[in-house]
Amino acid sequence: MTPEKPQFKILIIGLGGLGSPAASLLAMLPFAHFGLMDPDIVEPSNLHRQILYDDSDIGKPKAETAARKLQAKHPNLKIEVIPEAFPNRDWEDLIARYDLVIDGLDRLEKKYALNDACVKAGKPFVHAGVVRFGGQILAVRPGVTACLRCVLPEIPPPDVLPTCQMAGILGPVAQWAGYWQAKEAQRLLSGSNELFLWTFDSLKRETRAVKPSRHAHCPACGQG
Image (cartoon, rainbow, N blue to C red):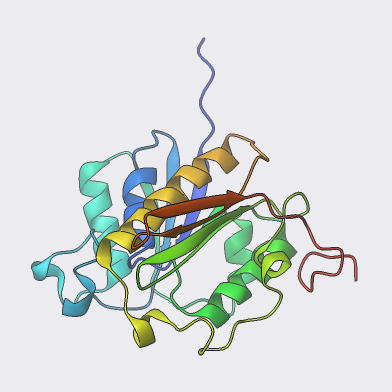
């Protein structure tokens, strides 16, 4: 008898420019179970970077629309729709139900909150951040590899790292980062601890990978 493949449960928080491409690729795994979390609706300004949606989806809830479109292409995909914002009152129970988390959030304070939540829960996750022509991707296995706060202990001020709302974002840049998140998620699910911080600048055509070290005094995963 052929052994059953593991049913990996993946929570994608934010279904915009990062979460859309990440979900599209991860849905191709034949043994995936998704949680799709996003409180927003599809807006016209989203469409250049959020590949799950088109003009007919404008005004519809992102989480429900993403679930419907993914299910149409992958009928065996199990999906839990969570039309709420992170963090919500049940975030600890929510994260506990999943094997891995994808950070598709667009606000720095929420990205740091998700980093801290996943570290506390011991859940692997893949962070990504994009702005203008570049960004970064960091896969994290809590307690084993460096987390976001090991790399940047505090949220950078807007004059150092502006948000997408302030500085804009090129659509393909967000899509590339989302696809890379899916790749790193598969590395985590395979058990790999060879994880890196990837940074890229599409304008300069530069990509760089470093393996950050855990910080003993990290406010999230350090020993104090």
